[in-house]
Length: 472
Image (tube, rainbow, N blue to C red; front, side, top):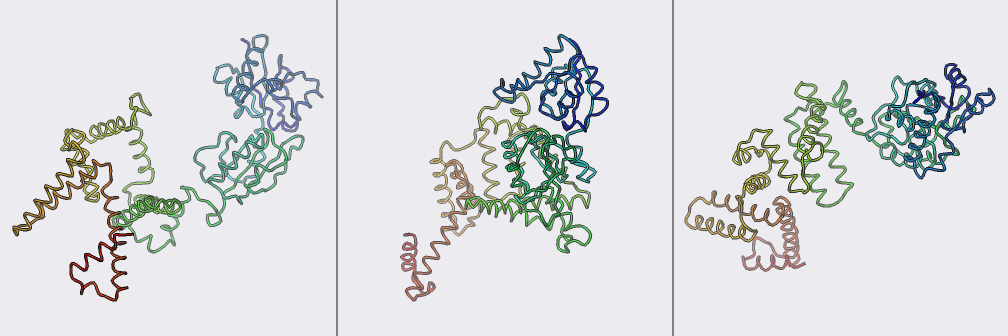
């Protein structure tokens, strides 16, 4: 096969053709333009430079992937007869060029003016993140964002929806219309909301989003949160934030976690987002303190959790098999035992953090035993054990003995019964406490309505009011 040279046409305007590109196209045995719908194509005709295009393939392809394959096949077929110079606007973003590179068919490349040259110059920043409109990154950072090849309204609409997740609808955007013969391509500032409402689009269209001052943003990213914390704990920062350390923040982390759990139970999702933000703040706060004192940094936190998730999901990131949630749990526990050098179930139980709430820790310890087959056969058997422990506690109380151990066993047995009934002890106790408060409130209201005082009532009278409060 003859050599294939990739040549950059730049913006498509004749004014942006380089002397080197023009010379190579004049000398080409076989010149193929991806599209003839550009000003530079008209210029080549005026100069008497013969060329073919791949425009006819657009109607043959059912989708974009098929078009890419057809274009690559056409270039390879042409190269069987003569050396080919294949000219596209921007080789670094052109999918057909990427496909030819993947097939190892590219022999040489002639650089040119990038599509984004004028936008980059206008940005006025030393660093700009460039990407094609159909290759927007999952995470958008703090750099100015230059989005290229917004070639139709539909793509512009999809792009807008994605960007609205990060920026507000009033975010200013510098929009660069199709190049055509206007090499200057004067940009205009539009609202992000209007990105898909412009008159024309083609492969030369690009949009530049410049970062706003922190206080002027409508939506914020994780990087913004890190920045906010750096300001609060920086020079002239907040006295309270500056006075905190790892230990002083510990109660807030626990408090925010519980408040998040409560919001999830209420299914108030705006509230959940707010509370999760409070939890995330605690993580960033601790990382900022850690960096100050040299204990750890934010990258240590993200590295630790990413490593853990990758290592404990070998069925996703490696060759292991796990087709069910149960199999995943078994794999997880086995990997954890291996990593922490836990020789047996006893070691695994001791490994359960003492910092957990007692009910939660009891449940986790029981689950470790259950994995080894040490468990009640059914929820009914666990409830029967609850009765036994209650009888034991009652017996000790009647005998004037300390009931502490028996009451502890009773609570532990209740945890077993709840676990085997597929219920969470923390959730059950929270619900029971809320129910008690509601019933007591109704009882107290009825006693007050009857112009009585709780303390003056007999046990039988209190029982009547209490039973009445349980009737909704």
